[in-house]
Length: 300
Image (cartoon, helix red, strand yellow):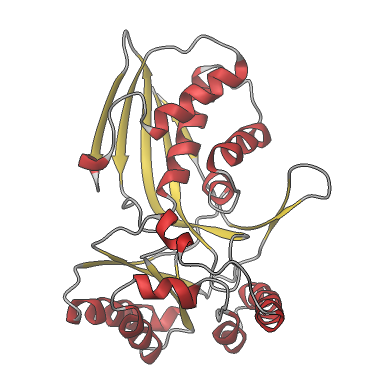
């Protein structure tokens, strides 16, 4: 049996729209074993919403690797344990793709390198910002290369910057979150985001809270997407009042991510939960850290 554990991810981080992602210490787990016929079982968060048929995303990723190898697809017993809620902006689809590809690669005898698995994952997901940190851990910046492909660069994350996620009890489809974005931007807004993203990279590396407070501001996506998240302003205000440097939408949302100092993390988590509770919204809150390892493979 092959067991693959894949971390949750966040993308955008405010001013880093569609180009930065980080892995967090929240996980989905996938188990693969040879079988006489295909069997898929799911346990954990959102299990009723996950297909147990061949259209399951983990299985599709598993099959994609065998297609790339031009090998016959073997029947498997696939067991999925969900610790990351679906459609909340925490990279659940990226975990499925990375988990399926890694499980297939091991059962196939590890014919592909990590770089080759990463390329397949990017092709399936359509962009690198979630699948790269899910596979490799840490925080990464992705930019299109002058030729084909991508330039992937690690981004230092200071250990005293603590991520706190507040996950509300409703989903927000990425397609809906993208639909509210404007087609064009002013020059002033473009310059604003370029400057603030540069500041974000320096703030993450140095841990300077004053820089981080301003760096998380954004004009590309958050002003439009926050209208889709009931209670956004109350949760943001509560977190900042409790000492957070700032609050951003994790991925496409609706999860909200606060970045804070170590000694403020508990107060920030409580404030975010209380704010959404006051809005009548059930919420999970987690104080996390950046996962530096990425996907883990265990063979039993």
